Structures are given as structure tokens and as C-alpha cells.
Amino acid sequence: MKLFLCTIGILWSAVMAVTRLQADLAQELMDAHLSQNIERFLPRDAEVRIVSQEEQRSMATAALQQFLSPWSLTVADEELSSILTAAKEKFFGKGASEFYTSSKRPFSSFPKIFQKVKDACSPPYFGGLNFPGIVTKSTHIRYLPTEELLLGKPDAFPFDENIKTGVSIGTPVKVLGIALPDREWFFIFSSHCWGWCPAEAVARIPPKKVKSLLKKSWRVAIRDDIPLLCNNHFLSRAHIGTLLPAGRRDNMVLVPTKRDNGYCRWKEISVPSDLLAEFPLPLTYRMIGNLISVMLGQGYGWGGFLEKRDCSSTIRDLMMPFGVFLPRNSRQQLEGAQPIPDHLSLEERDAYIRQYGKPFVTLVGFPGHVMLYLGPAAVGTDAPVRDRAVFFHNLWALATESDRSGRFVIGQAILSSLFLGKEPMTDIPSLSPPVFGTKPLYLRHLTSGI
Image 1 (tube, rainbow, N blue to C red):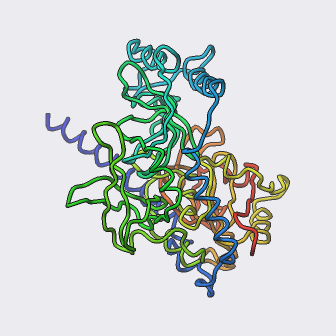
Image 2: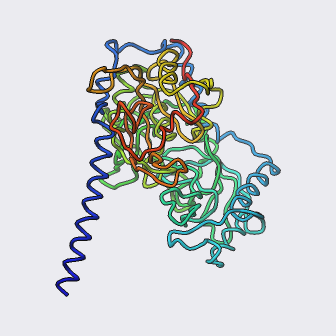
């Protein structure tokens, strides 16, 4: 028994040593040669507006209209049927891949829930509705009406293929369907996504109230994890990018809650001005930097898992307070972007971005990952110290094998260069060639008036 316990102790110590080494390497990878302090990357004129007030006002007006657009949305029956069919085919169609649950067993091996979820995508189990609504607590929009994790591989956690996106309290939606007979799930459209969400998280808004909300000014969250309290009663949380209608005074906002009859009840609450601000924020380097400083180091959350962010939701939430509306995923965010010539080496790609990128308002990435370019900076501690393009992004992992069979998990929002994992960053001998040197890269400016 003593020998057994001693062996277990040695094995546990070895596991913990490897875990600590991985954590130490990840931290060293991020900040050994590149500061994680956003202040270092702000220009001297950080308080100056990046674009004119007129251009920003125009962008913010368009962004707010897009945000509120679901309330006036009209979806033809044929289009809705096509969308539902596409969701159904992804998981249940002929030749569809097998998906695995949190127990690592195939979803199809649970026939009762499998059939119930499948049926919900078509009549008679899909009930048609049509009314404006609003999200009353943070939730997810999903392909299928189930909370079950659906993983592409048994060990693919946290990449739940059923999650489309997270949505914040105060998000306008159009409710177009309900899963019968339980009535537990609504089929909704938001400004950037469609899918199923828990019915308990959406309240109905009368047309008269919709008209008044369209005329109101709005306030935006500039911190994360803001508790929204009414008479010391917790309602929900707001995060950077959350928009709520302004109340009667500067520090007041209207928070939607759900009545027993399904309609919205608005509660006016007070929130400190350093947590919510008038929409939009002035588009300055300093203001963007302030929000980045809040997000840096936050954990990665695929599709809003655990109210965290992935790469595209990080950029989307970061820019929304300034009136810059972005779609949900990286592919959509990079639509219309100019391709960086494929034949360029990694060094040449870096130089290209430094030449053509506009600091703090240029996206760089590829379908699957997106980053915000912050500008050039001296990177490295050993001579010669080189200027590199620096980016803010939220990254899950780096591939450690050319066939992508291995992962070096970072799992948080960081500042990095294109050379992440290679010189002049800390070298990881087993790391495959830097992803930014092998993927086609794209560059997109978010503003024009610079």
C-alpha cells in the first residue's frame, strides 16, 4: 500500500509539474518579449479623435439602426422554412457528421432527445409566431432547441457546434417560432444571428413601446460583469457592448424583465457612469485602449460559453460602444477585406500590415480568426530589436503539429505579433510554422476618414 501511495504521489507531482510548466510557458509566450500593457501601444496623441464627429455620428446611427432592425424584420415563410431545413440538415441530414454529447457518447445514442430535437425543426412541432421581443438575461442562440453540448469530436470541448452566439440582455429580437408542445424554446432573429433560444429569456414588446424605444437614446456598457440591481434584487449582468435604453437621468437605464404573461416589464435602475456611458463613446485611441485593458487576460469562450468571448465576439463587443457595428463571425467581419498577397513571407506580411494598416481601426485575420491591429512596436529584448505589427485578439490555441493534431492552449485575450510562438517571441521547439505565415491573410479598415 505504501508503495502504491508513493507511486500515485510521484505521478501526481509529475502531472502538476507539467501543468505548471505549460502555464509558465503560456505566460512567458505572451509577455516575455511583448508587454501586455496596452498603455505601451497608445500613440502620443491618444486623446485625438480617430475620425471626425460627423463620420462617427453617421456610423453610430447606422449601427443603432442595425441593432434595432429585428423589430421591423419581415421573413417570408419560404425563407424561414429554408433556414430551419439548413439547421436540420447540419445535424440530421443524410451524410451529416456524428456529434457527441458532454458524456462523449454520440448524440444519436440518446434516441428520445435526438428525435424530439429533430422534430422541433418542422411542423407540427414548430409553431409559427411573429412578434417583437427583447432579451431579458444573457443567453445563447443555438442551431437546435437543446442545451446539450454537441461536439464534432468526443474531445472537442469547448467547441459546441450547436452554439451560434451569446446574446446580452437588452438585445432586440423578432420571435418567429416556438418548439411544441413544451413551448420551452423560441426561434428568433437578432441583428446578427438567427436560431433557438430559451423562451424564458425573451419578453414580448407591444408595438407602441417599440415605437417609443426607436426614438430613445441609449447607453452602453464599458466594463464587464456589471450587476444590474433593482432594489438590491439581481436582474442580470451587462458586459462591454451591451446597449440599454437611457432612463430619465444620466445615470439611469431601463432594464427589461419578463412578466408572467410573457410581456416585458421595464425597470429603471441607477448604474454608475464609469460602468455605462452615453452611446456612442468618442472614437479615440485612449477610449479603445481603455476597453482593451478591461478585456486583456480574459478567458476564451467559444460562442459566448460561460459569458466569455471568442475572437470575433471580442472584436464585435470592443467596437460596438463606438458605433461600429460588426457581424458575428470572423468570416463575415472580414467580408470586403483586401487580401494580403499570398506569396509574401511572414516578415513581408508584417511589413505590409505596418505599411497599410490603420492602428486601432484595422482588422487582420482569416476565416476562422480575427484580430485588431494596434500599430508597430519594438518587439524583443535581444539586439537587434525589431519593429513588429502588434495585435489584440482572443485566441484558443496554437497548433503544435503540422497536421494540427496537437495544441498549445493560450485560451485568453492577448497582445501579440504575427510571430507568436516563434522568434522574436519565446520559442516553442515543437510548434508548427506560425499560423499567420501559412494562412491567407486579409486586411479590412473599419473607418474611412483617417
